[in-house]
Amino acid sequence: MRITVTMDDDVAARIEGRRRRDGQSLNQVVNELLREALRSGLRTPAAGKYRTETYALRMRPGFDATRLNQLVDDLETDAYRER
Image (cartoon, rainbow, N blue to C red):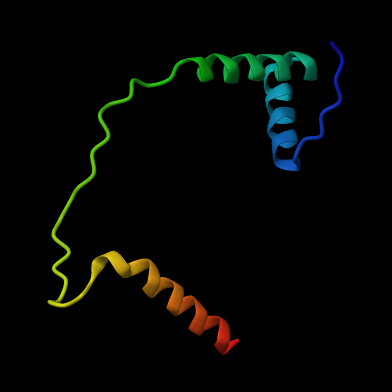
């Protein structure tokens, strides 16, 4: 299959360096790198349990933690007005 690919300069330089080092053609190097990348994508590490660390918020008495979104909205509104 023939395909046109636009590479970033740093990627092209690394491929060219590998091509010269190994004495291979551009096609050989690109195909080899693509195969390696595709193989590594098939092996995914086993996912462990996702854990989050919890801790007490220690809010001041009378502070309503369920209204934090309202506080954020008010702060964003104030910041917008200052602009």
